[in-house]
Image: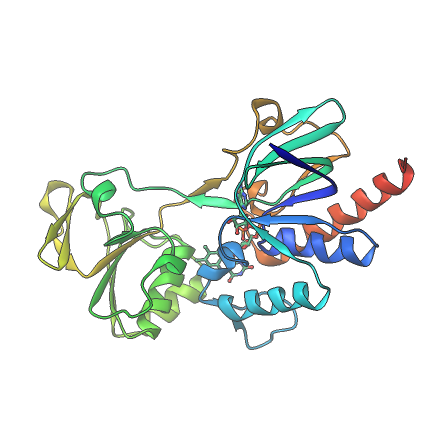
Length: 293
Ligand SMILES: Cc1cc2nc3c(=O)[nH]c(=O)nc-3n(C[C@H](O)[C@H](O)[C@H](O)COP(=O)(O)OP(=O)(O)OC[C@H]3O[C@@H](n4cnc5c(N)ncnc54)[C@H](O)[C@@H]3O)c2cc1C
């Protein structure tokens, strides 16, 4: 296997990894940043971002991600499109398998974000990626008909608005007796006539019926919902699968950092991820300058 030595390896080109890369480049380093999907990460799911400073009227997640990407390009930072795997520590270095190559890094920034939880009910596995989805960014480009969104939090309500703006009829089905989202999202959804919501609805199975799917609920209430697609927003968990058991335990060493959503629990916001990225890049800069060989 070929190998390559790098000073800083950044895993993930979402807001956190991008901010870290920009700051490191300004400090004179050439970070090796790797992304397994599209640049922008979870931001590509966000309908309308209203809490990122500088955008008083808000900006779509897609457009903000595009600006971040342009910033990378402006500073000539190349993102490697590949999956980082099997990251482990070897003495005072870290080794990851990337594109059939061994990347040996002096310092590592894990900015891998979160992965959506799967709904563990009958039918989901077979229909996943065809009729049942967990991320807005993975939906087909042309959409029509009815979407059933499962979940009652911020993401579910944000998805409902995004799909209604894309001319779909939307039904939000939530297990709880009331929404668990920001009031502003709740009010916005209430004002949209093409978004309906049902409470106390616990899905138990999703089945295919011709070109549609049918979502069935526990105890038969509410009645089954027919939809053209189902979008599940039932929580997210940190993306740690590619780390060795030692690194999953988040050892506190100056050469190894977790930043952004992967480590921020329920405080998952773009501004926090960006701030994490800048701070960590400055700490790594200091470490590398003090330990220059
Ligand atoms: C529906 C929705 C709406 C939102 N709305 C808002 C909002 O209005 N305001 C706000 O501030 N925030 C919002 N957010 C949250 C915001 O998008 C996240 O906080 C932010 O994207 C986190 O950035 P991150 O870089 O930490 O992680 P992510 O954006 O998740 O990026 C992580 C990246 O790492 C990559 N990756 C993971 N593992 C590997 C690997 N092994 N190899 C290579 N690449 C890897 C992933 O593909 C991903 O691109 C929203 C999120 C969602 C889902």
